[in-house]
Length: 113
Length: 142
Ligand SMILES: Nc1ncnc2c1ncn2[C@@H]1O[C@H](COP(=O)(O)OP(=O)(O)O)[C@@H](O)[C@H]1O
Ligand SMILES: [Mg+2]
Image 1 (cartoon, rainbow over the protein chains, first blue to last red):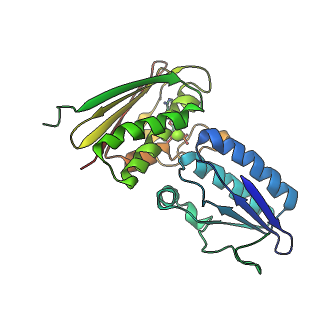
Image 2 (cartoon, protein in one colour):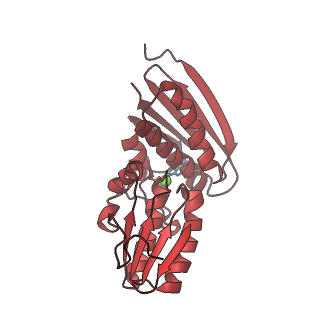
């Protein structure tokens, strides 16, 4: 996972670079929680551009991160979600909690670092 | 002529989480002989990943055990059987309900069976407590 943080917008960008299954989800969870607690971001964006596979382990992992980010008063979104992964999200109804957005937002749109 | 099979394969591996990717990629690669669409391949991978993960974390509860997969290709479908000799399921109907999980502390979502059921065309769950669990899934590919 690659991590970028924009202090001005308090925007934490987490770029996931692996297939998300039970084996990998635990590692992503540990790293994401570390970064979220370090920055207490106002906005977290999960970039799925390099994620080609995800099963229900990803759902549990994302709901857990949603709870942590919102507990600190932040919001959480996803970008670049491929159709096969969107299908898993839709089944779990997770897009109401963590909506998919078109671009990252903030003043320096798209290049947050 | 649905009972005349075209090809078969069997896999046996340890219940290690590293093998989740190995299992789904191997089954998907075998299934590609039927010339499925990208979406069909993705559905198969996801369903296999769900079933194998369940063997590891629920069946064997992260202890060492053997997981078996048997795949049969028919002219227009693939049958995938995934077996563990773990603790088994007490109430199968309940286990299949969306959001039902016995391991919420592991951030499980309880969506595994729901995904297997909707991504595949047929799902049969057989289980005996303290003996094990057998998942039979079929996907039509035509
Ligand atoms: N192979 C298995 N052996 C024993 N119990 C299982 C097995 N597969 C599923 N289960 C039971 O069924 C429940 C639901 O499974 P699933 O829908 O995949 O959700 P999750 O894996 O998120 O708990 C599990 O919590 C577990 O209690
Ligand atoms: Mg499961």
